[in-house]
Length: 278
Ligand code: AMP
Ligand code: FE
Ligand code: FE
Ligand code: ZN
Image 1 (cartoon, rainbow, N blue to C red):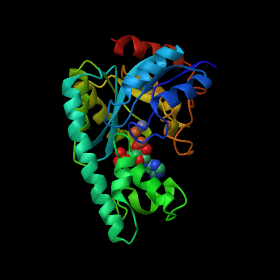
Image 2 (image 1 turned 120 degrees about the vertical axis):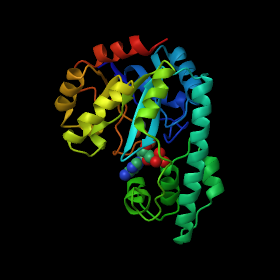
Image 3 (image 1 turned 90 degrees about the vertical axis):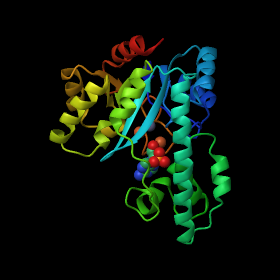
Image 4 (image 1 turned 30 degrees about the horizontal axis):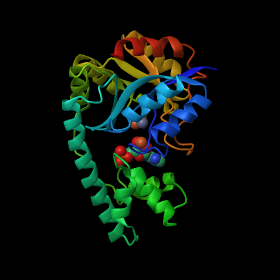
């Protein structure tokens, strides 16, 4: 089945494939429209655009901004311009924050007795560094079997090596994206593990800040697609979806996954593309 995939990571953040390698795999998976949404960076977008052109795939430039209020909330931005000076300087600051945070977490791990070459880890991350890079180093060092185990034991929220990120309200990221002509979408709403009564007023406030869509078809919403789909359409939000592919780890979706359940995938993705593509 031909399909869109609007949520993907590359080596520009914590994915394992470069944009060119990923696009090759997308083509094999029969994905026809895709968006690259690396964490807090647009540095993979030029290579992705080039690879998309060479292979004849439709491409929507994107980004995924990590925000931290009372909960960790990710905001996708579609149709960002990769040479936008305002966004570039915003992401430059986030990159500095990320480096500081990962170094602080690395120090904690070292004090716990793990032998880690932090310089090498920093250098191995091609772009936006994150906890998965530390997790992979723990796997490589034989301290844990899997990346998930590294999160469960050391790197997850509240675990011994955890360091919180700089606070940033989701509404700030939403307004910023909107002001730069991009389409802000709430990523994987099911991962915000709050009851609906708490999410609904937030959603309203975020819509007032400029939120335009809801990522209904994300692997973490499995089993709840109908609920989120209904909510999005009721609230006048665009419906989006994607695999959130990072690597072969089953915790993240595989390329093109979610589309089986997403019956209106082509129509919804086209509606987003039309609004976001400039
Ligand atoms: P960071 O942006 O540095 O806070 O790292 C967050 C990233 O780590 C997410 O985007 C996921 O890719 C990954 N991640 C978060 N929790 C887990 C987990 N339990 N197992 C594996 N990967 C995870
Ligand atoms: Fe990630
Ligand atoms: Fe995310
Ligand atoms: Zn993601």
